[in-house]
Image (tube, rainbow, N blue to C red; front, side, top):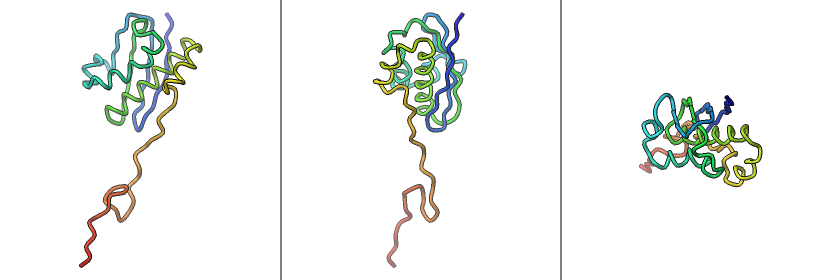
Amino acid sequence: MEVYTATGRRKNAIARVRLTPGKGEVRINGMEMLEYFKRETLKMDIEQPLQITDNFEKFDMSVRVHGGGLSGQAGAVRLGVARALLQYSEDYRSVLRQGGFLTRDPREKERRKYGLAKARKRYQFSKR
């Protein structure tokens, strides 16, 4: 049995994705997808690479994800799924590239600067 593995990252989240031929079951950290990602938009985000390549019902997906928040984790899983599909078939590269699924989102949280409340937020200015 073929197993296609890949790693996806976004913000501080890291996802290890395993695709195995099956009938479309998705387990994330041992839970059902809707149990882990309760928002429908996150579920749609994860399924996009499979739908654009017409592989939605062909693979079972097993994911281990940690770090970051739910949105970052969903982005990491999406990148991992796209990379695993490339291992299955290189023919999907152009379709996934056009959809923007192979590009890692480089945006990170900006560091806090001294003298400020957060990265850019200032303390209230008092003239007197």
